Length: 586
Image (cartoon, rainbow, N blue to C red):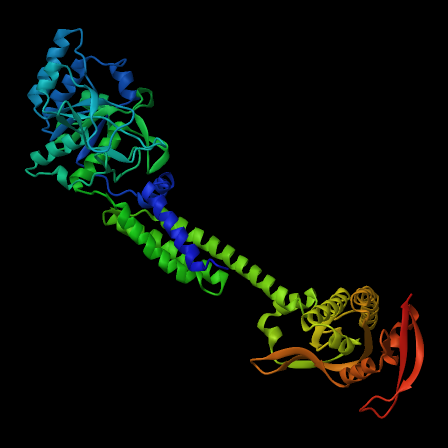
């Protein structure tokens, strides 16, 4: 084949580099990261969630609540000196009750550590870089002024509705709008006398960062909003803690799927808790640039190419499977160290390599079999070629075995005389035409073309493959040659005024058959007295005559017409041999 395995692997490698650069397998990559890379870790007890759940709705009343409820909560929590209070609820408009607004605003101002929420509205198709909001919804002016800080609640799920990243910031009218989680984490660090920098957060092209979830749904500490409001939990329990209050019931449409659990949704306030924990722990995950992923992919491709060249298909599969397993565990170790490697492309490439290599080797073997068949098919029957291919090198070892078989010799009578009158180029064409006829007749009846000897042909029947009724098959082959030569002789008579005929001899007996020669050059042939006797019979045949020995005649006499010609003395034999002329097949 013109394309070699290394060329095929190079094409596949280039294809996967392009797929990686275009992020074509992103959905599959994300699913793999969800199942394999993401895993839980100890929950940060500095974070408490106050749930606006079914129980609280029953206790406090129909939603939305009177804003004095939030004021009461903030005042109670402030008695315990929490580090930060974050309300995962928006208040874009003031209440119709001015007293209600005043109480709420005063409570937020007095506390001095309340972070309130806002959110932006974006264009459907965002450009790379810091996203620009079309609109920004914030707390009403008095409440906004009273808040310690503001943070956006915007959550951007992936195409499969799973929240994997947090939007750190976006822009609005030239102002940078930081996320609710970042603002709360920053306030907490200020409370403890520490600092965090946004420059330390690894962001993607849209100012988002990977959320390294610590817990699954309901793993963070969750306390019903109403229990705290009723004083069932002491205020000092929240001392120096981050307190997040937000919706915790499906009916409020603030729940999302997460990588750690693709079936049970997580409430927005829990997602904020996970993000805050990652920021506090500085536990970030950096996505490797595609160029480095591409370099890893090429390195793995080189290893895979070497593994695919193993002689055993099972061995190659086992080696590639071991490499894929190593990649999986390495990717998890690298993830835990802070970097995300695109392993799906690597594993998919290994799988493609294996399939392509098996297919390539199959095609190569098929082509080789076809080539061998075409070469050896000129000498032996197709079944013999198949047997040689099946046995492989074992079938090509030097040596022979004794076997009962039938040998056929056919020679062209009158060819020497004709060659004196015809140009050499034409003689070659005539010879090839006659030899082609003999070969086809031999193959047609299951014989093996042993060799061409000038204008003569030697064939054997019942070797190397067993052939039932091999004597009769040899007789049929000889008769087919006689019939086929009639047309050729007619053509020669018309062109040159002279024709040629076959002289054929057939004998059955024991002989040694096998690969005879040297290790570098051998022939599949047959040797022994049977061969010599057949050659003598053929030399005794007159033009157009088929002579068979008595050994052949006894095996086929019920199915042929033959005339007894007497006995002849064969050179090298003391006893004469009875011979018959084949006159037809019944």
